[in-house]
Image (cartoon, rainbow, N blue to C red; front, top):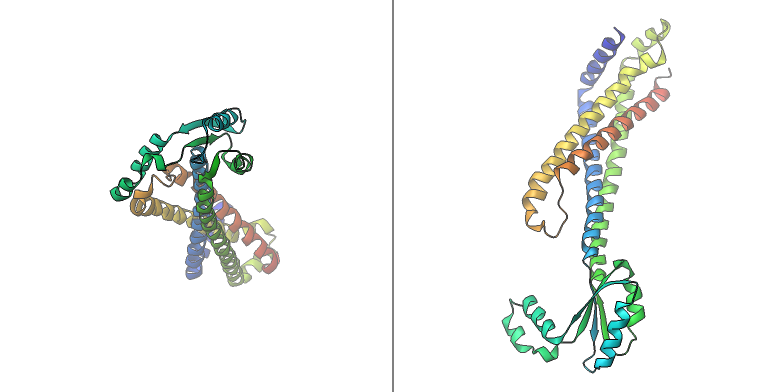
Length: 291
């Protein structure tokens, strides 16, 4: 009987302040969506870092005057270096073939360059790609070395942009969460005020604090769960129309978002939405209901 009463009061409470309930649900849905997006972005940036850094190469270009002895000594030093996982020597002819492949859409540029004009180089795969600065410090002053180029320097700038986007999404989620908390607190306060006489009577007849607070807390929890469901729908829409639609041509550059990741995000969103709503409602009742 008590459970039936509590559930009926939850439905009545949600309908009594329907406009504020809708606003609370929408705000909660937006904040949970932003939280889910920021979580996905965080994971994707980490995956992309692992993917790109695994294939990062450090190129050591030799001077045109480098002798065979200098090249052999450098190669031996590189192959015995604990920081280096793989060493690939690229002579002038192979460098020219790579140049032609890279600039195949610019035949005039390719025709203007001769194999002898391109430098010899060593392409290195590191055990830890983030240690490229040590390679640069160690070999930049070696005889016969002209220049050391590391791809991760460019990748660092790209990932800094991704990290900035991730932080923006997280800040937006926090801002929306604060707005949702305020709406939850305001809605519960209005609901408690509208039922102040009923609450007073229930206290007089000996109803427990839990029994009085339960309908209000469950109203907030239901709103949070509905917001989480709407947030899941928003993530599904983003994957369908954005990641698999407008951005499908960039799948080779970006780590794809799987359906499993989308649906695994939902329990987190639902848990946070329900827990935050319940705690906010309980704290609000302690201040305004005085039970």
